[in-house]
Length: 420
Image (cartoon, rainbow, N blue to C red):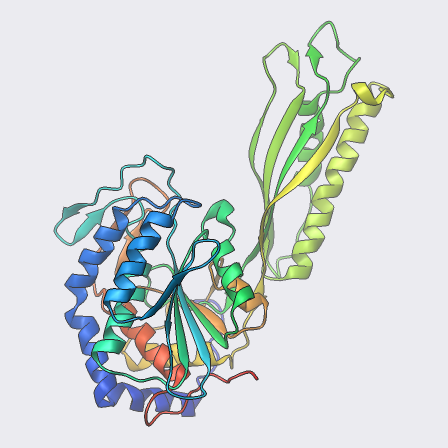
């Protein structure tokens, strides 16, 4: 890692060491180890329930059933499809949410049958994020079977719409409708990966439209949507962004026109812009959108087209808004999760940034991070995705120790501050 790793708070580290050694926590961690095969079976079963973004309901109902079977009595599905299980604490402690997304990037009809070769499992979505759902459910089982009574409350959330155009809508809706003091997303499998920041993204679908016409007969009489889009693309390609905070952009898709011998009546692009800083994100957004104003004006002026009916025009549609943010080094969620990783004997391999369900709480100043589920995932977001069942107990163990450290339990004070 190239980033400088800040010091751990010695008091927090000492507390997490003591918590790990306590009898009930030792039992919970052992349960996570012993139930690895059960967890893997569950991961397979969930994977084989299709859950494209915006179509997660069937998988969600299965998770409702499992949460109830594992001892949660307060389980519901909210207005947009998030499955929310509530585990109340004993006292007036902080409120923590732990979330794993249910959706996959694959369209309806994709074969999600899991094929096994030894400890390797092949299927679209087997790692991302059925592994995260496995870990989420294992936390519930371990806490209940070990009879750990936390001081603070814990929400267990299986979210909708994390991927692509889902735009983390499940996470955004949950944090907007619940008062929480901390949040942990479960995504990825690299056990040493703890996210300190959230990469924000703004996405637009921009369409340039005109009357179109014959490539010869209407030449110079009407504007071309594709020509105007090419002018805009050239302008965008020459924009400069800061390296710190890292800010990026790309025209990810382009489509338009009707035939090789037509003046294009329409052309559409989809644009992705990303940054760790919301101000930098808004700046590049403003610069990119201004290019379309200039481009259509230039295309119309090239042929001296003044009749609005013959000119090209543009319109935009916002198709993604993931807020950005960074957490300070002393963030309790970061300190506790790093301490838990250390006392479990694992190395911090990736103290980085990404775009996950944690973006929403991070952008609101809520202590939050994203932790991993264990195992090893490969070729995510492809139909050739596969997952290696290697030390899959480590993800749930890290999450259990972190969660209880944050909300507290008998003999251990909550480390996560409670906001009044």
